[in-house]
Each structure stands twice: as structure tokens, then as C-alpha cells.
Image 1 (cartoon, rainbow, N blue to C red):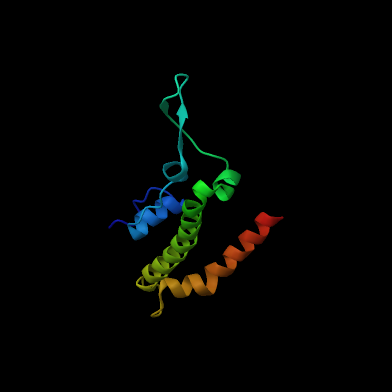
Image 2: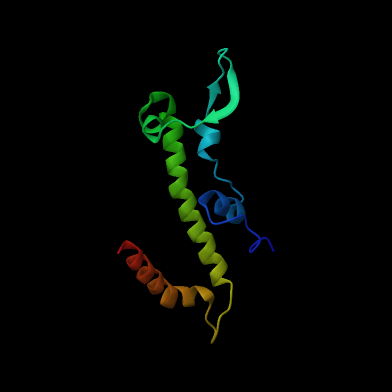
Length: 117
């Protein structure tokens, strides 16, 4: 019963909890050790600016892979959640996915619209 004992709702946490494929944090991928006064790399890891990660050639391949994983991970989480909801019975022979699709989806749109205002 892994579900319900998760570590949060970030994409990193959800991919780890639901797919057993942890999304690697930006600091692990792009982090650069801060240099000490003597010129040696220190233990503090700095994250370059997003602009640098997007535009500098040394980061480009990793940036594309990181961004693509965001899209893929989001899609795979959606697929997994649908699968889980389809396996949960609700009422009158329907599943929780039916409930989500016919009721909660519209409620989510209302909440999204309210946040935009």
C-alpha cells in the first residue's frame, strides 16, 4: 500500500511515488560547485540562472532532456492516476474515474478560473 504514504505533490515526488522513476532535481543535473578562495571546488552547489541553462551550449543537451522529462513524467502520472481510479469502485457499478471525469473535472476548471482572477 504505497499510495497515501507519499512524499508530496511535486513532480519529483509524484514520479517517485507513482512511477518509481524519481525526477532528478535541477541542482543534481546543473549544479556547479562554488569555488573557494583558493580556487578549489567547495561543497556548496550553486544553480546557474535558467537563462544560462537554456542558452549555454554546455547545458543544452541536459536542459532538453530535463524539460522533456517534465512533459513525459506529467503524462505518465496522469496515465497512472487514471489506471488507479479505474480500479476503484464508486457506486452503481461506476468507478472513481467516472466520478472524476463527470464531476471533479469541471470543478477543477472552476477552481482554475477562480485562480486566474
